[in-house]
Image (cartoon, rainbow, N blue to C red):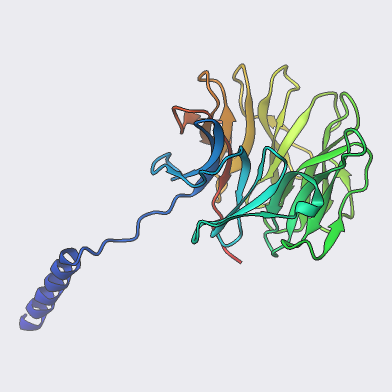
Length: 295
């Protein structure tokens, strides 16, 4: 009994000391990055998964869109309204342009299994022409992944880094979803209709793809198996529902909607149930969920 009593006193002393010194359990880090209209520009913000703890990250001039986390969650990648690609170090606050020699860049993301970047590069000398490239951050080595006529854009990595889904189109009513291996081989077409399909996003288990389609007359969120089967519509609201993004456990999907009158971030169950608005105030777009597992 004396031994147990002494242990209790020691535990209480440690607890009092812990509080007295102002020690606290680590706060939950912000887990969603997104673009928010801030004054005259779109700036990069972060927030918790429940919509709390809003924090503005960038403050420089120029619109900043399509932010994504780096693999180590220590940096953010995004593009600006002058079509430049930038990287922002969350530890130092340094904002630096990358790959200026690549010209007009439409999107940028990091491979889940390496430091290489996947980008959409537009050609200025040919109208409506872009392809997907794999490049090192410093541009010292590059690989052209697609060599198709027209537009190749909206690429998305599978979480295992083995495949890339994207949109390809050459003219009206030809924009469909495709998938290739990460080396550019084995191209497969996933959709085949006269609707516009956009913004594919792999589920965490790489088995399903959420995407946007206007086949019902306006843009809604859809989901299908990675082979194009079992297509299912998830949202049914008049207006714009776009840019789906899976939670790391696959149970939720973030998306952008103007159903409340202004573009905001919403979240729903992965089967489309229980949608609710996460952001309010100024317009918000382009969500990306923080990486759960690091390499």
